[in-house]
Image (tube, rainbow, N blue to C red; front, side, top):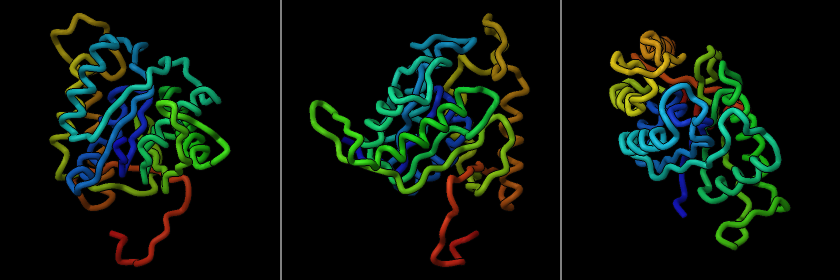
Length: 239
């Protein structure tokens, strides 16, 4: 088992890269162990194939310096926030024992993002209940509840509760996104245009990051929402 400091949950390969890869890079640079668990293979996407998406996810993982990455193989579009999927995710949370979980946006253009957000919230709480029993390799797992669950902001604008400065990591964030070559604008591609392959999409991602950065007097930022109030011991910890 690789114990993680931060576990990032993503409905689809590339969700984490688009939503919070700057934060991942920032935390990895500080020495924290970060891993991504993708819920689906994105097989219902307009472009690419599941196998290609997995290869692209591995490439992005190397760029981000992840400690681990895995894919749960839930059915894209059709997975639900139900007992079956919660129990599978609880196994993952107990396996990696993260202190912090970063999850999909609480609501978004793609319904899977909101479902994945709700699934993460419920699984993180239930993972701490000792009477919810799970096993890994035939051994009963111990209860584990992350200290905090934060939700990254995706396509739809959501007012952030806090913003992470990712200015020093912007270029590698872009590299991690472009690892998904099948998904984004390619003038030579013969596949149908999708929402994210439109040539205006990546400039939109940069504009959002610049907007969040501007809010904290930095160049680039990533916004997050919280499930509860954040407590501080020293007011000077606030930037």
